[in-house]
Image: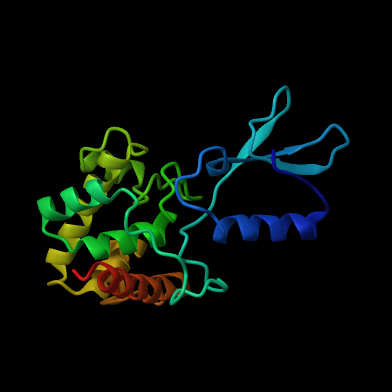
Amino acid sequence: MMLLESGVRRTALFVAAMSTVVAPQLSAEERVYRYHSKQGTLSFSDIEPIDTYYEEVKFGCYACGVYSEIDWLETKLYPDTFADEIEFAADLYEVDSSLVRAIIHAESHFRVKAISKQGAQGLMQLMPATARELGVHDPFTPQQNIQGGVKHLAKLMKKYNGNVRMASAAYNAGEGSVRKYGGIPPFPETKVYIERVEILHKRYKKLLKT
């Protein structure tokens, strides 16, 4: 069991660390609960607390942290994780499977049950309304989430004539933002996201030679 009882500063450091250092395909670690102990101390646990009020801690997009200390040129890749599901969806919608891996890595770090602060869900971080439009009934089922996410990505790639940077911008910030700014939105989070997707895409492509 993971437990932390501390002041505000250590709490903030803990939450920041949890949002950037997460292993793929976790079980209990995928959910972190925030609650107050009987002594009134703010605490965190990976086990759902009993007989006390708690909230599930939600984390943002994995690659959107402007001040992330991750070395994206060296960080571990996961070419075999959900390989069958990724290759099937990539072939079905004619999208580069290395780009799909890069998006999943950037969005959720391959965490099946990832939920963002905005409510985006699963591997490819689909918003509930978007998931419904894509025919995804269970966003936490890898096959459904990946097929829905890749279908959406394929639509964006077609809309932006195969421009990966534009498609990545729209995937992250929304098509409305791209239209509003006439290109890549000036959001710091979107800018670093695009750069990191580009790095991950090239690295997965080189690793898989696709």
